[in-house]
Image (cartoon, rainbow, N blue to C red; front, side, top):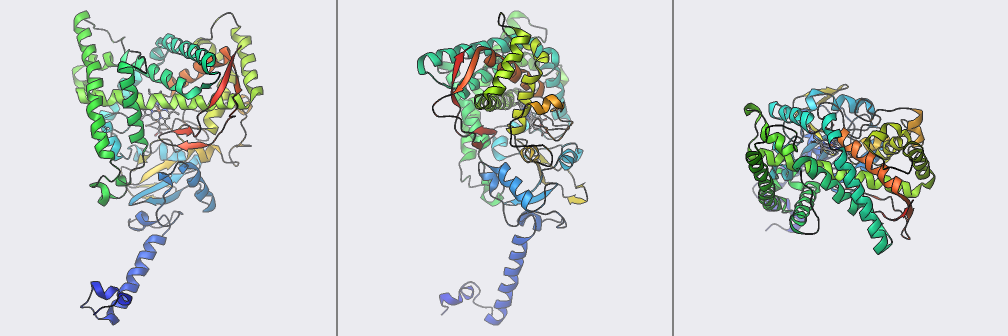
Length: 506
Ligand code: HEM
């Protein structure tokens, strides 16, 4: 009878031990070779030569809340800033932490697709712009939104709404200071930002905390959680069918509720168009989509996906960035008062700051740039790219199906690229006018190339105006808890401990 100290014989009783030992030895060596291969398991199993440096085994960092820091550290240790290979389960990754290779990746037509996570697929986002495969449908969506949602004319047409929402937030902050003596900034910013997107997309503002507003908030919160969660099913296909983390089940529940919620809004718009015989395109984005020519028309379910995605992409990025900026304002009173002096000189104190003042406020704009450098909302450029076909980056062969990331956080914190990278110094952008819109990869928080963020101008217009309104109305000082700059990477890079501070009327 086989004993436990000769365990392999239990499974292979008919193979003599003398043959078995070499078989096991070969298997162990082969497994070790796969595991220890540069870039790890998924690279070892690919047809690519092992020419890219990278950690062996499987990298677990993407499941954590500091993936950008872990990947930056690995790239440094392995001297692989230009390009590093790694594996997450059976998924092959490359990551660039250098402006040159980042540009090559983001601007290459080979990387014009995005890998789609199970949660995004289940939430029907493959029919929305951000995850739609490169092709006619995606091009059509980009063209429609570039003309009707993100064009300079539309952005300026919504200026009054932005200003009104900013003024409402100022009122809420005043009220909170009256009742609590402190403000949790993100709560106010999140609802302001959500209403801002709802206004330009659905033409509707919501009262959060009750009725439809409360329902919307629940749907958005659940969606953020599901899109932000690291799902092992995406990388270990054999586990996929088991849905161990319950992501698929929750997504299917959410999709049903979103379809009803957004479907109702689309129906309201349709009825309004018939009642009022609306024929122009000057309404909100739902009106625009309903008004499209026959050949461009979207089905109702595609429309839900497109509209719903705008809410996800447009809300938190803006609120999170502004929270980081306000944390910096509290921490650096000298910088805050310099921005306020600039505003007092340009706007004075007899009227409210508006969109048209922003071009005359270069220091305020430098504060936003410096905050995007130190705290990019998408440190790994949020959602990665996927190689549609085989391609070379430098001399390295990258097989089709490889996921590519750019570690923007590593680039913006590299002392070989930025002087004193860990110091908050808006002045650096007064001395050098760096474009942040995607042409200069030293600072490209909105990405670059064909899939660059289409909402970048809208996002910046909102952040500039609301920052100006918040600084014009209040002096921002710390609360007893101080300011904790610890980070937490979920769908975006958030403050781990929400900023709670005091806003004193100016
Ligand atoms: C501070 C604000 C924002 C930041 C930092 C940001 C950042 C990004 C980044 C890094 C990407 C990926 C780009 C790439 O792959 O090269 C992206 C894509 C995208 N963003 Fe933004 N974004 C912001 C605001 C917005 C807003 C306000 C909207 C819309 C209302 C929006 C809609 C989108 C969409 C639809 C995509 C996918 C584009 C595609 O794949 O074709 N973003 N964003």
